[in-house]
Length: 246
Image 1: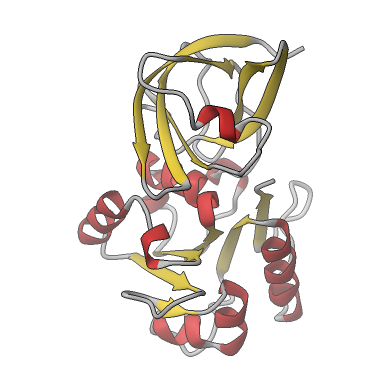
Image 2 (image 1 turned 180 degrees about the vertical axis):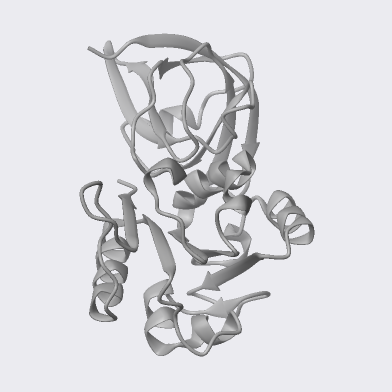
């Protein structure tokens, strides 16, 4: 059975009218960057729990989670009503294999994300271990609107500190203020993303970590399989590691 601890919200930040992040002080067990845990609240006499990835580095004493408020969502709509000082239940043991420890070394690491699924990538970046493993790291973040591009301060600071880091926003519903316009899958398929990153083709010594909505994960994986890349498994090293975000 899951082991739960009570966490206290110490910071609450609304990025947009529907996107928010919370920082929680809670005594959980150590986790690995890229993993997730569960948050829970008592709603009408029942514990309602959902899985959320850590945004913070494992070395950070505060736990950070990045969420979207889903209208009438069983948990997110209730989490959105909380404030500093309120409590939330946190599962003490983290889960998941979407980590660098489970990912083979390569020349290029592609981090392909949509929406709040950028969260585990921010944790991996904050942890800092990737800079010694990859010659180049490319973070792609697909969102609908320019205002949905959150965590810009830490992303741009990373870009200024590490020359092997490339950040590519992909905006679908309006003209981008930075980056490219279009879905991640379309930009990858057309070659626009590859060209934007200064490449003529995808480096065969690449690894792709894909995290987003199920359809994006499915379509991107199939696109890469069609290009000759293989799924990565513990029993057989490959090029594609995925995490479906709901």
